[in-house]
Image (cartoon, rainbow, N blue to C red; front, side):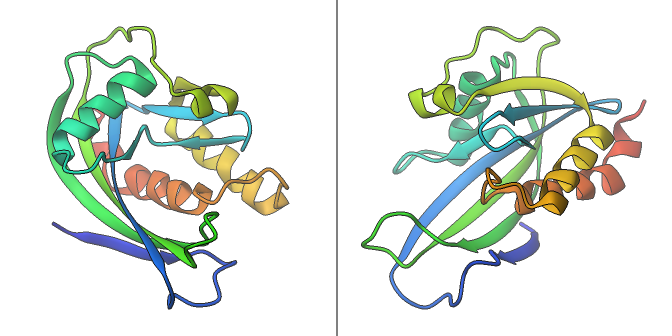
Length: 177
C-alpha cells in the first residue's frame, strides 16, 4: 500500500489531542476522459464516490457498498489499490479535537448504466448526485471554488482536488484506450 500524501487542514492548529479515527474507501472510475464523481450542491464541489467504513467492515465490501449507494454503480470490479491519503482536519463533535481520516483509493470499473441511487438522508439534504464529467472540468471547477474561498466550501475539497489532479497526470493516459 502506497501513501500518496498527508494533508493537514489549514484551520487545524495541531494534530495533538483527542482524535476521532476514520477509515474510508473511495472509487476511481474512469472512461476515457470522463470520471464518475459526486457533485454536492451544498459545497459546490466534485468528489470521489465512497465513504466511511462500518465497524469491522472489509474495505472492498465497504467500497462496493458505497459505490452502489451513492452512484447506482453495478457490476463493480475493483482493479487495484491506488494508494491512500492521511488527512487531519477539525472535527465537529465536542469530545474530539480533530479527525484523522485515512482514505483508500481504488481503481474500479462499473457497468455502463447506473441504477437508481440509495443516498443517506444527509447526502440528499446536501444535494449530492452522481455525475459523469470530464476530469479536467472537475479539476477546474474545484480549483475555482478554492480560489474564491466560497463560504460553503467543504473540508474535503483539498483532498479531492489533489486526487483529481493526480488521476489526471498518472491514470488518464493509461485508461484512454
